[in-house]
Image 1 (cartoon, rainbow, N blue to C red):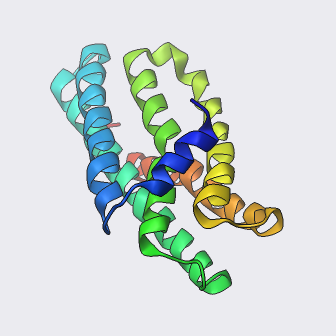
Image 2: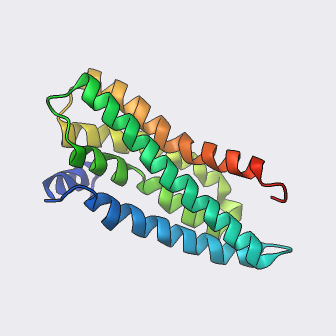
Length: 173
């Protein structure tokens, strides 16, 4: 299945506000958090349970914070530049489904930590956002490039930034 066909299916979905969050984002965050809890506890050298819970908790905060931050940026950019095509539901779909690569890579890196280098595949998010902007918002290429840049960078770097800030505040981790 191609990215374009998937975005077309997503665009055709009848959904209400917060549907994408409740049906897609929360289950993925819960799943990745559970996997991180289990595998970080298994791979920890000391304080097994504490390590698993702390890393799982950091994951929840980072992913939820990144989702809401990216949604706020997307909404403000679309309201400011393209108020005629802006829709809360469309913005939620765009942001929610664009995080797919991040969720999958979190799970893979938790299960097999030696594959941490796969985080470079986060760049695929740029293409996902590019196609999503074309299908969901029908934006021409010039405007799509500007919007895609902000959304993609926010999706890729916000979870990392939030995680780093939290880890800096924790003395034992």
